[in-house]
Image (tube, rainbow, N blue to C red; front, side, top):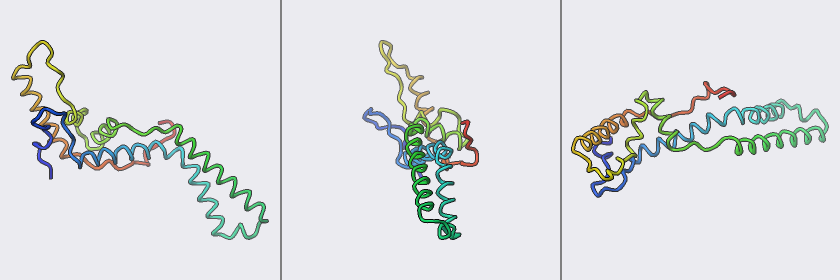
Length: 165
């Protein structure tokens, strides 16, 4: 189990890094989001392929002439190819921020809390950063680290997918 101190960033001042287990969950969340977005685009192709295989298992293709069987096979294959090309063109790969947002939503965490783990304070500029600001930043990072420990696995939910999404 990860400790909140693992999220505090490196003491040499480099950008904070996310723990490996959270990076894996972010990657899984991105895959889950992509599957949810891709499902409506490939549902027709999967149904057409399943229908062709079902007809083959029922022995329908043995009862029809060979040219009909090949014509249907070519038609289903072209439809599947067209669906895959349309899928690649229309469904983008989600960003890491979208993956973090999905983890927050599915885990019922406050919005934006996991973003703090990979964030850093703005440069102080002309004014020096006072002690209170630094303390508040450290406290917010600790709260985010504790919240990250409650992050759930973001599994895809195909049941809520609709074409108008």
